[in-house]
Image 1 (cartoon, rainbow, N blue to C red):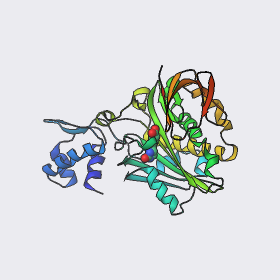
Image 2 (image 1 turned 180 degrees about the vertical axis):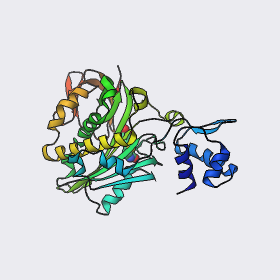
Image 3 (image 1 turned 45 degrees about the vertical axis):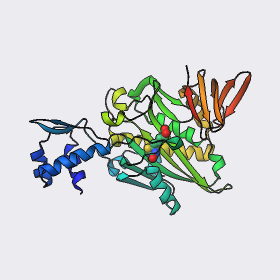
Image 4 (image 1 turned 120 degrees about the horizontal axis):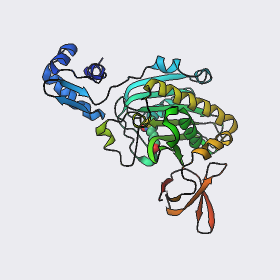
Length: 325
Ligand code: BTN
């Protein structure tokens, strides 16, 4: 075990530990402890130092445990899970699975990490991924069809993610087309689906989801849009391993359904959770900006926008949507 991991395992309880006690437990000097503690900021963690009491994290950490996650999967999901990889750190769980996919790794391989050094969001954006505080989960799924048949996949994944949220999240939950999980207008989670394959099939998708669970203060300060996390909106903070199991279960079930029936059985939930319908919106397309009023989601997953007299439809792709009222 590395010194950093040993230190994190002690601090994970969220209580104060003196520099002396930490040094003695880990077997390094107090100066060494101080250096290690300072480095934790680089993992997105906030450490409080109080004279006479020692050091503590601003919130406890529940480490990810593959067995606990697997045990909590519904049987239907467990049967289709090929492998569950839990990493201490990684550049990005999506990037990791993409390279495994190229080496022939089987469909149904999932990957979770405590920390992403370079978490990726849609449209080349950075996904803030502090250590041990949220959920960073990707799954590789292979399809016999070509990439064109997977156009609505990220919308189905959005529904799966919303279905996996704890019931105590309540009525504020919504989906902002194409695939932001929101709570009362604040971002709670995001989806990054990366697809590759032959035009006539087969193809594969690496589906990555990030859910904010307990965002440390310093990492939250670097997010450039309104956000929230489950610790702020649930009456009881969900267990990270239980949340991972719930998300993985819903993802695997949704992937099987999408594989056999496409988007049709997701449409009711998609429309129920759609927060854009009836709102003034702005679409940022590669070709420019469009302003109009959202009129709901069509059966193929495209969004319908009233622009002047014209009802236009836009498929997701590299589009970003903002509600302007
Ligand atoms: C977005 O809303 O922009 C999409 C965010 C997707 C983040 C997840 S976290 C797990 C997976 N690995 C990544 O690097 N990104 C996705």
